[in-house]
Length: 467
Ligand SMILES: [Zn+2]
Image (cartoon, rainbow, N blue to C red; front, side, top):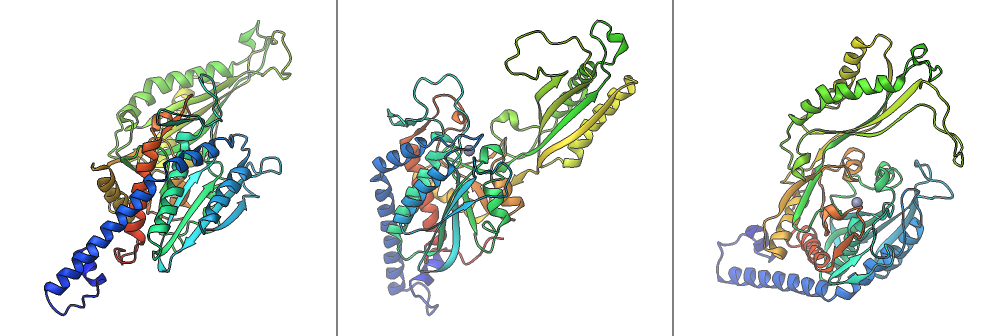
């Protein structure tokens, strides 16, 4: 690094570090420090602005499902970034799942090029929020600011992170007007429902390909001192057991699909759940309880549903001929998807050996392989240095128990140099009275700004490009 910096001062290898070279190195070092201090002061001066920006974002209720007000949120961010000199493009994921004229999936892509060629650092934030739910003590869409916090649905997950990245990028551009490379900011749809109308759609169209974008930071709320390297894998499947209908007063004339499913659950309890508890991972998953394989029984339904919503009478007496259950299996880098599937098939086969009339179908709904960026990746190292410098602590490296849009950047975009880093307490996501700390937003904006200076500043930029 010292040699790089000496070279940047114009030293051409004429001598060991002689006095003139030493002086110019020190002058250069001091100018870099001064610039970083200026950057941090600029970010601190944006305290009121970052609060207003977050509140305005929270006031646009981008609830998903069904996915509303995406265009309003994208327009709001577009105006802001266009004022800061970014080229902005609004993109509707027209052929994506869930896109319709009533619920269009809008995305914003903003880019600012520097004064010379170099890497592109991309900040990706989702703009959708989950439903409000019960238990709020204040208005979830007012963006109330109180005691150093902003409250509201989406403050923590993840409009506060989006605001921090916008302020970081704006202040960086003002301070390092001669930066090399490019900065991109995207505000995308549908992360809460799989990301298919957002990042997946953009990645399929080349917006996250390695020849265009070299470093990706997703400001999800992982806590300002943590770098999230990736996530566990997911396999969702629906099991259906089948039986035979009969009158409920003579169940011996039918075959009860719910009892068959009961036998499946008993076998899962008996054999699969204990086995999953023994599968441990070396991935640094948080919380600690998720550092193993897990299985959730998401939903179960047996028998005929009452068709009419306003019907208030009793159901008819029938032996159910169908029962369905949705499984949510989260798996580890040490496991293969085939292994995960065959464990469940084995459970079903064992049940079949004991129940002669047992019949089942299994319908795979969705799968995502585990993803984990290496600690030596350039974006990881840049954020690591930023955390040490801004917060004065060693960063904690973590892996998320659930997936987020990194899966599409990795699998579709083939981009390995991607992390989640952003302000906010992870546990508050999707909760009533969700909030984000204002100091946390400013601190992580400084870490992001430091990472930009590290990756895009002409003089400190590594010649090595990520693979
Ligand atoms: Zn999120």
